[in-house]
Image 1 (cartoon, rainbow, N blue to C red):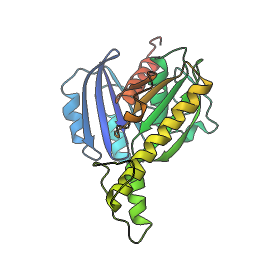
Image 2: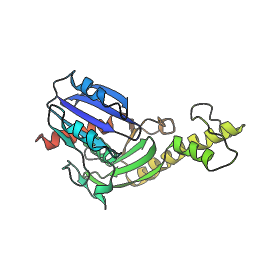
Image 3: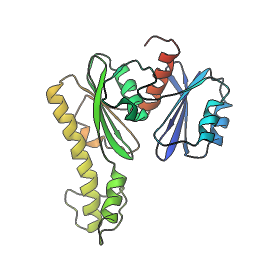
Length: 245
């Protein structure tokens, strides 16, 4: 069995795989590392991999490397991967973005793939039909946009993203929420529409904690996968363990 650990900005996702089949996942708050030992005690793991977008303490790094099975760390630009990374500064590429690109492409070989991860930030990453990661863009996520409107103005309140989003807000609250949520939806749809013009066989993978798939309901090239990063990590682990993908 394989263990993948995806450490994000606010939480960590642990996933157990049997081959390429997802068996169980656990989401925990960053810093609650004791849950890793509990999760590992449930399965006989043969190997594992972890990635992080935050700087870990030396003690945490040592704890991960001291698990009772071989662990590798996904380091962009260093760890071998089953696609070509053509990013101009590969060492600065987020490990989660790279893992998502691997996972999405290997499930759709021979097609261009656009990966949209709507989390703390919204990232857009592109892989060619030949398996070349060429780059991507980073945009503020919904929570970040809502907080910015409150932080950088003197009168606008902090609004929750959940609630009514009319076409035109009739209160300050709905004006902010609609402006942010609908604006993000239009942004995402614009990316998909423009890429489809250039790549008619495009496959779009939508992932992340913020579910914004509604504006894309009319596009049959879109699929939602909340586990594309763990799937990519698992495939990278298998690739580094000698399995052919």
